[in-house]
Length: 81
Image 1: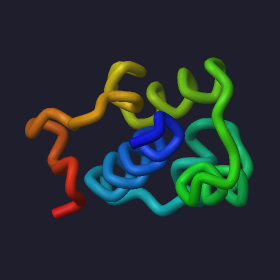
Image 2: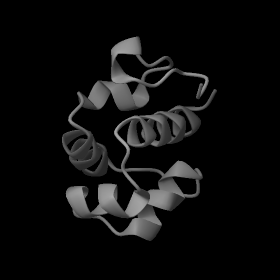
Image 3: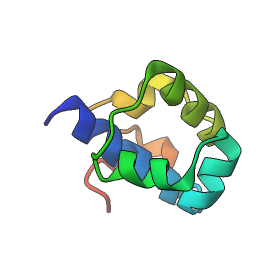
Image 4: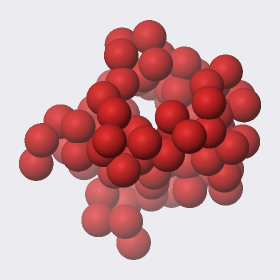
């Protein structure tokens, strides 16, 4: 799986695990809601700065956003179930 796909999946799973909408996450991170949607759909690649603000908004270490599997304690599983 490409890193862009891994990031998109992890972002979506972590956002859903915290019960945030794309708009809410965007507000917390200081980003545009459409941009968050594009990241989740793999239409855009995030910068390092973007990964950092999203991790802060989700209250996770930035490394979790690019891990091939998400630890169970996040409330999300790598396969989206």
